[in-house]
Structure formats: C-alpha cells, structure tokens
Image 1: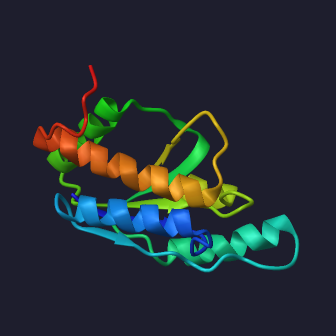
Image 2: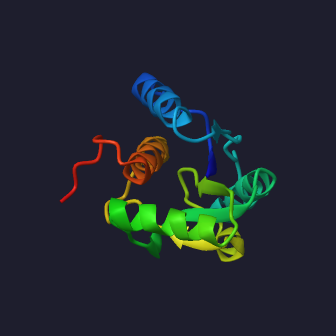
Length: 153
C-alpha cells in the first residue's frame, strides 16, 4: 500500500516534527509514504477557514481517501490492518488520510471522503493526530509483515 498523509499546517512544535520524521522513516522501510502538509486557513469565520483548508486537502487526494474525524469508524490496530489488506484485495493501492486543522474538517469534505476513521475518543491537537496516524500506519504495516513491533494479544 502507498500512503499519503495530508495534515493541515506544518508542525510548529519540535516534538511533532521529530516524531513525524521518525515514523515516516520507519514506515518508508515497509511501504511508500508521503507527508504533505497543506497551509492552514487564516482569518475570517470558522466556515471560511475550513472551506479554504478543504480546497487544499482536496487537491492532495490520491486513491482511497480517508477523513480522520472524531465521529469516524473506530478500529483496533489489528482491525485496521485487516481493513488495509481488504482494500488491497479490492484493488486499492493508494490511501490518502486527511487531517483537519484547529477547527477540524469541513463537513462537506468529510462527506466526499471514501471513509471516515477516528484515531481516538480523545480530542487530539492536529499535530499530535498526524503523529498518531503515521505511527498507526507503521503499526499496520508491521502487523501485515509479521514484525514484532506490534505485540497485541
């Protein structure tokens, strides 16, 4: 599977940049991955900001598109690995994951996605959500490869 992670905003905090680079490097050894941050919307009302961010996210869509949203489908890591495997069996070779900015994703954009997944029942800052998403993609690929990184039971 080829992955494209598209978060709104470039991580401003050093820990987030470092963690993204760490998991991007680890995942790249198992599956092709791109992290393509898009510019955060600025100024105006929340709906206008979300709409501008939606346009930027939409422009980076490639293949099967997943909106990461708190109302999305929840998975265990093992179930997510099975979902990715099922997508491949059905002919999907590319997955794009959208992560909204501080105000979340535009509801119209979420409706356009092929799927909506949640990372947690907790509210995560978008920088941390990007790190968690990339780590979980790495975990999915280690599960699929039978690598000991994932020791679920």
